[in-house]
Amino acid sequence: MSACPECGTSTSQSLASAIDPTMHKLPPLLSPHRVGNALLLLGVLTLLAAFAIALREVLMMPWLGLDRVSYAGMLASMATGIAVLCGLLGWIPVFQLWPSPADAGIHTGRKGIATLAVGLVVWVVGCLLTYEFDADSILGPSLIDLVPLLGAWLYLLGLKQIVVEVGARSRVFRTDRIRRQRIWDLLIGILFIGLGVVLVWGGEAFSQSGSSSSIPFGGTFTLDGRSVSGIGFLCMAVACVAVILVLVGLIYLSFNLAWVRSSLQSPPPRLREYLSPVEGD
Image (cartoon, rainbow, N blue to C red; front, top):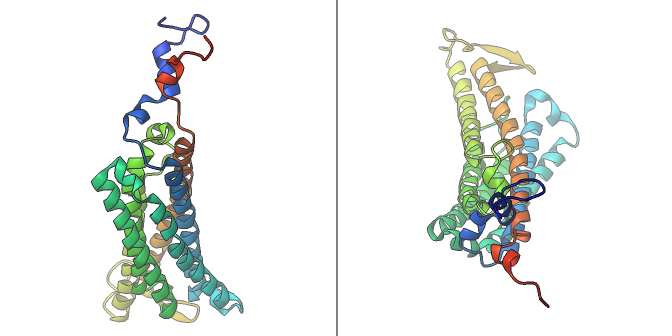
């Protein structure tokens, strides 16, 4: 029978949509339930850590005046603590992932886990350094912020290698082109944030040299009673936009990982399950 007599839908298309043959052609994972839970936990921890460190940076910007609020220091310390705690808790799903993603792609899976683990270490160390050495810049970010950014970049690079292998087992993740968040976009966003931090520092140093008046935004203006570089302020604004875009992207990524977990928890049936004879016949 090539088509359903009632709706006219092709039988082959109906079977393909029900059994997802692409997924069943892939190498099986050792523990798909554990891998799905680990990926979702990584997504949630990543999102929480990113919002925590972003909140800390906002609280530490002197020109906003939030640092003068009595509880601002406590909130900044709590935000840093949450970011560090998320980095430490991230080792739990890392151990849960090993060695399952390696079965999906031996070299890619193991390399992804190793890169992700290195990123977690750099992230935790960087967050502690930013807490220990507060920025003295009126605009807020300083070069020390590049350390946790490097950790986040390495972490997402490793996560990308894992998600590409494991996410192929989710039909929605493979086929959705609108709601699927590409991790490469997040990596590029982090590079823009890092570039913004460097240019903020460079813009302030260039303006203080007294030779910046001949270029656009090269002058200075007064902000909260202090002289601020026009270039530095412009670059900080670009970095803030990149931060917002990365945070939104991480929200989408968490939903994507939930898709993958759902497919691993409840995989579609195989063709032989439809063709198996009914017991008792």
